[in-house]
Image 1 (cartoon, one colour):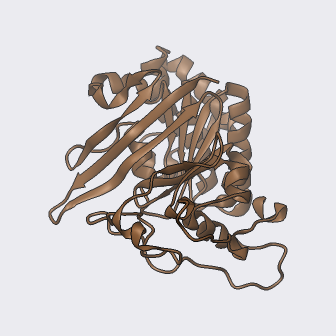
Image 2 (image 1 turned 120 degrees about the horizontal axis):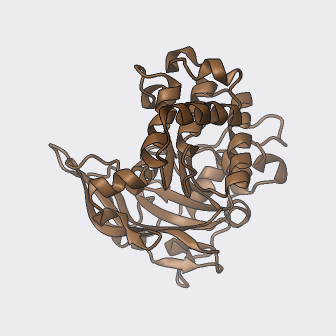
Length: 342
């Protein structure tokens, strides 16, 4: 497989009145053609900022690239002028935003919003773009697309708005689709439909997907690889099976432990005590140190290097050091097949 995207040592900060907020701190990952990579973690861990940095949607100032590179087809997106990025957004890299109601333009019909990219990037006439828009709405499962294409976002339900966002993102057949919490605020039935739709469209078009989420059930059903993000850093990465069945980082254990257990009738949901770190003043060592029940003195002083568990899994944790005490994975983090499909 060819690597279509390589993010190397990316650091993104925001200058505020109080301090510099270090939202993303040395993040590295890659994406291969036709694969789905899930980036998971709690709110505030840096997932959306990472996604928006790839699209160069961070407003600068107050945002700024401190370090690193984002290589798309071998070219660094952080160095491209805005004019060139306008030709990449939508055409080469599409994005499904977290809240379609605020992402869609309320003053324009859905048809016009789909047509914008088609006219700009594929040189279609207005009539051609209109017909293509009907075809796309039909593709994403919008009923009576000939009528719906002339309606405004407020005339769509939440699930239909999300489908319209997917139609806009896929209009120009992008090589990469970034889906930032694509099923937030949707009921379970609509969530399943949206995920089935994305999976089917990926098989049909061959688009690579970066899936930003905190829902591990979605990850299990959609992704092939997972990057676990916390405190602006990726603390563990591996295949879906490795992360679900052989996790090595205490934060990953905490995330897995917080999943409902379908095979247990009555059970109190596990929580990770404490709060995420203040990224205006992040810890010197491991970002999870203040919430980790296994924290040692080394964890407070220095961020651990990655330990390669396998060719596809690596973890940044001092527990994997030869000098660290042996710790067993907590029972709450051991998952079964029934839970993965939750």
